[in-house]
Amino acid sequence: MAEDKPIRLLIVGFGKSEVTFINRLITGLAAQGVYITIASAQRPMFQTTQSENIDWLWAPAWQDAPLLRVFRVLWLFFKGYPFKRLPWLRGLLRVDKTPLGRFLTLYRYLPFIRGQWDVFYFPWNSTAVDYLGLFDLGIPVVLSCRGSQVNINPFLSGQQKYVELLRTTFEKAAAVHCVSQDILSTAVTLGLDPKKVVVIHPAVDPSIFFPDSVPDEDHPVRLITTGTLIWRKGYEYLLLALRKLKDRGITAVLHIIGDGPERNRILFTAQDLDISSQVVLHGKLSTTDVVGQLQQADIFVLSSLSEGISNAVLEAMSCGLPVVATDCGGMREAIQDGVEGYVVPLREPGDMAEKLELLTTRRELRDQLGANARKRVLADFSLDHQAQEFYRLFSETKKNQQIYTNKDQR
Image (cartoon, rainbow, N blue to C red; front, side, top):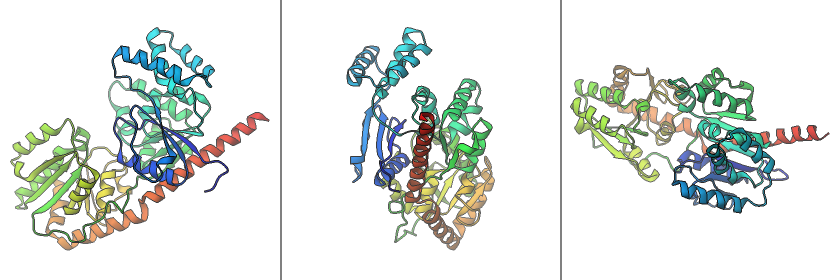
């Protein structure tokens, strides 16, 4: 993997809060010698030995007081002088002739007026749409297609403009990463050229997510699920499945990790179904606490209506849990039905309850599928493998850009 010069990667769209799987990718790339700049409103914290390869570029958020925005633009002017990309910035300012539009352009793009990078990377489609002007800098862009921003948002009412801009990012991107073959298929229907695509599955760190060496068997069967409490996670169908288990005389306790706007709805639904005593909402937990909960659980359940490939499922599999998951997104690319768990139809609590009953009543089957799940993660979803695949993607993107540049200079 040695090169004359290390790859200089700019990541735009790190997010308001640090996302675990993006953290893992960044530290994995830094360990391979990639110099990474993260453009975000808040400085990210990386407690790793590779942190010297990770820099921060302040890209302030728009959601602040107007006077503060003015001071920030002045500061960005001062910090960016002398401008190295003034013609590019002038071109962006000509697009919107309104004072507010030009001010927003300055606010958004002044952080990038200086700096040397080989590749831009957008982990989220929506960020690529917001920063469409960066595609015109002549630096190759890689963007990721992960889930709802490709397989839900474009199909909602009133999203025609978003679809048009999404298609534009696909056209201008040098390469596109998809988390699953299913996401790739959907993105192609939205205008993505499959020749640009590299499928790289999500990954987990099996040294962090691992089975408990001494499992606690003296408790009712523990079901567990992890995810933001939002409608597309399909929690109501999971609660209905839990009720069906109760009707069959099976006592199981469901532990839900995560927070979000659907919390009260979940509580009310559990009460209406008379299963409140069997539902435990933990809220958002640290990674250490999530691992602890997974190690105490018996079965992981995914009731989502939409996914790319669920990182939560991979984490559970890495902890040696069998999985019952809905047939959404690329979940069949992670779970072989009857091998690492079971894949059930969407919005079918009866089918979910049937598979859960099978696993709750057969301990040896749970153990076998859980062991298979751990082996599958070690074989196909390791963090090292993912980092190597992304390194190859960014390296080839940089190399291709150099070839095109050399041709243009002849």
